[in-house]
Length: 590
Image (cartoon, rainbow, N blue to C red; front, side):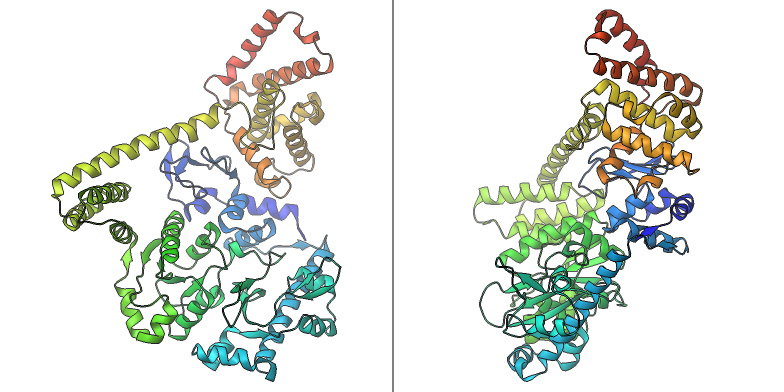
């Protein structure tokens, strides 16, 4: 399903990339650009830049780059069309769509319809004689009938073809059911139900569509949980269980639990803000989804070692997304479901009120690792705690935790403050080394960051990048460029491809912008283009720079076409190249 190109141009014209990025990243202006911490990788030094005049973003550290649409695709985990719709809604625009691929749209609609009908089948089976054992299981877990209905819980019969037969009768083909992840094809070519003899948990996205299932055994057999495979509608990294319900909560925080049953128990107890990841550790995409609905997340994972380790990982991911994080400790129970059954909802609410912030939790977690009766163990704890405290940006917070941690370990505040100061120094050195690797090294590298893209002729490719930077800065140069150089003259096929698309934009009367190509170029091609656009040439030097770039490309092409001819006088050629590159390579890139 394509979206009209003119609409894309109008949307891009209305978008303010600084405003869009600022909703996710804290930006500070420096010169004509804005800088902040990259939301796509962990960093301490701001290497993420936004150029409002070019309507692009670029990270010197990880190489992510693009225009407004690409930013929304990356930050929200959306496909191109969905990102366009997301932005259009922000600017009160209606997306006109052209059905250039009605088969793909129809296939997607059929998959969603199949999943919805499968959910109905499982629900019906739960309340039939065949589902007596499954219903008894839910009753033992103290789930009320209303809860079963609210979450659409069901049962997959102990049969290899019960669902297949029922869905075939409704008119679904085996290919559609396989695409929905409901049936599996054997090596012999026969099909059978994926879910068998399991209680079923429908996974519903924020739009209200059933996109997959989680199935749980009712005994101790393995695997305990079986989830739908990745399909055209289901991506487990981008969705959260019960988010369709939790997004309506009036609570000021969200509860992040580990499993389906924990979430359902929490909702039944009145905590309608509970969600869970889908059979995997928390992902960046899920954290960003949470930022759309809350500013605070309370992690209430299982109390065992695996749950605590998962909590540590979740802290980093949630804080990277800009969320405030608190950690809930569950005394005397392995998970929220068990605690609520034994102590009740009000006792759990008190746990929430006493939940630790992430710093206090990490210090306490470190404390539990060491035996304070041993001096060397206490020293190891203090060093680990100093690293945690030194990572805090606020000096007042550092002082507060320095004092409380020194008291906890039985040392003077002054002595521990020295340990924190040393940790600060170490971390500053590490950040400096990281900055050198992430910012300077990429800017000086001869080859593109993307491993799948390689420059066979670095000199020509640098000139080709410069030509693209000129073209995207000043489209009035397009006509002259088109007359003097063609895409096939480029040494880099990727750069030639981008150049060809840019000239096509010009010929069709459209603006030559990064955003106009985001639906055409691959992500790595967009990032390569944005990296090239960091080259700046003053307006009064653009004509001369264009001529020099074209000369270099032509000379290098001649060298490729007639090996050795362009090297007849190496010293003269070296002098010519130095003359031509000096004007725009020295100090122009940045």
